[in-house]
Length: 365
Ligand SMILES: *Cc1c(COP(=O)(O)O)cnc(C)c1O
Image 1 (cartoon, rainbow, N blue to C red):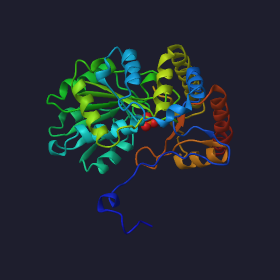
Image 2: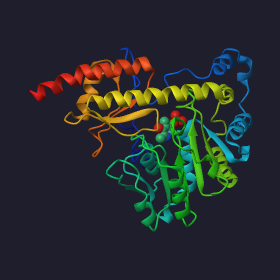
Image 3: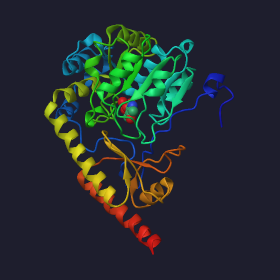
C-alpha cells in the first residue's frame, strides 16, 4: 500500500531492484558482483584501531585526503576527483548535473546497468535505449548517427554482458560527440582486464569516468565511489552534493578507502586471481556446452542452449548457489555469475555439471 501522503513525484518513481541479499539459508553468493576476497589488510587495521571519540565530529565534507590518494593513483590532481557515497550516488549526481532534457534523450545501451533508466525517471530525463550488436557488444554506429541527444552513458565493461570496448573505440565516441555532450563512462569493472580511459580526462572536458571501491577493492560495504574529470565538471558535482548532503562519506569510510588505495600489491594480487578464476570457469562451462560471453569483468554472462535462464536460476538456487537472472527480453536465457574464489567456482561448475549434464543426456536419448 502506498501512503495517501505520497507526492505525485514519488508515485511516478520506478526504483532499481538490487540482487537478493540472503538471510538464514547459507548460499554461495554469486549474484551481486561482490569481491570474494577481503579488503586490503590495512583496512582491517585502520578500522580496529579507529579512535571512537573522533566520531562525535563531522567528517571532512570534501574528503581531501581520500581525493589526494585517488588522484595520486591516477596521476591527476585532487581538483579532478569527486567522491560520493558509492558510485551509485556519483552516477545519480552526474545524471542530474550534465544531462539536459532540452538537448534530447540520454543514450545508453538496451542492456546495461539498470540504474540508468532509474536515474532518468528520478530526474525526468528522456532517454533512448540503443540495441546491442548481435554478439551483445556495444555497436557505436547508432550513437554516432543520432543527431539530437542529451549525452551518453556507457558502462565499460558493460553490465551484465561483461564485454568491453577498447580505449580507441571510446576515443571515437569522444571525437564524434562533436558538440559539447557528456560521455559518462562507468568503469565499475575496468580493473578486471579492460582498458581504462581515466588518462583521457585531461584531453576531453566532456568525459566523466566513474569508479567504485565496491568491486575491485572489496569494499561494497562502506559505499565509496568516485568520478574523474575536468575540474569544471568536478566542481559542479560538489555543488550538487552540497545541495543534498554535505557529508555523504563518513570518517570510517574515508579512512578505510585511503588505506585500500595504498596497497597496490594486494589490489593487483586479488584482481589477477579473479581474472584467472574467471577464465578457468568460462572454459569449464564452455566444455559443458554453455555459451559464455567474453568477459572483462568479475562476472560472466552465460547461457545453456535449450535450458531457460529462469530454470537455471531456480535449479542453481535449490543447489545452494545464488546467481542473477534478468527477466528482460533478449537476455532472459542468460544468467550472470559473479566470480568467487577458485573453490566456490569449482563447486559451481560441479553443480552445473550435476544439474544440467544429466538433463542433456536425457534429451539426447
Ligand atoms: C556495481 C556497479 C555500480 C555501483 O557501485 P557502488 O559503488 O557499489 O554504488 C555502478 N555501476 C555498475 C555498472 C555496477 O555494476
